[in-house]
Image 1 (cartoon, rainbow, N blue to C red):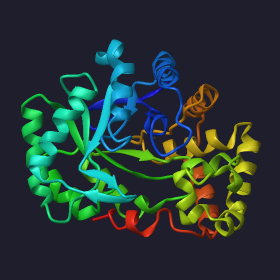
Image 2 (image 1 turned 120 degrees about the horizontal axis):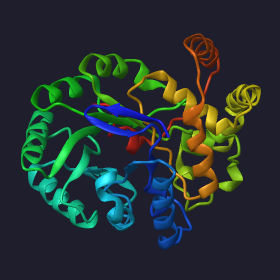
Image 3 (image 1 turned 120 degrees about the vertical axis):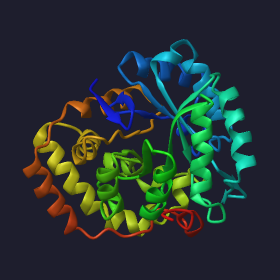
Image 4 (image 1 turned 135 degrees about the horizontal axis):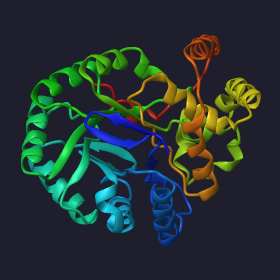
Length: 324
């Protein structure tokens, strides 16, 4: 495994998003099997594990805490606060008293005295980001967290927050399928020396080229996402065909190529693809060894720009909580 720097943290080039191990997908995997998978991931070189208070809720942190306990000092644990999903709608609350309570709960569930990377899951419009950043600074001084970050902020939020307390990482959706962070965010991260942690780097499974609409049951959260409607998936198949053709020419899988593309965009990027299957984990990790040069990236990106993609990435309620 290769390793990268995101802010002051050294992490495996590819991390592991743990959400799907107990949240958003049915049927939920066996807990003991997921503990075994997390420990196997560590044995294979992964040192970067991502969860959140809202996943479950709470059960995902408990799962990761139990799995990581024997290797706690050797791994980087990231979790998030400030958002819960109630009646299938996101509720953002970053009031200091709420965040303080969340942190104590996360520490207990993760069975640790400190959290390596503590994110604000979404920016709360009624709580000044400077106030939140000041609270994170207090947590760092108290030794309860090592670093902090924000999930899905806008540029102004990043700049204002960073002036109060240095941000280690921004987390956002990013993939060949969703490139919006390139428009403004990357330039700001370059300037402020902030790392970037993409979630859904495989387009929530779409970029593997193996996902079919009929695979999405009513209990799969993707079934409510516009990008995964029958019409959108049929229209966007041309994008999958494009990815498949390049991957085939390089002798790798579509998933491996899609991850390699993400890694090639910036040296401070560490994606966190999620999986509950060992063979997918093994497949994903091989992406770190795929080299793409600058000319290849320019050519590929130019071709991507020509392909029109349809469908929103989230239902409206969720998209309204991003990019402030």
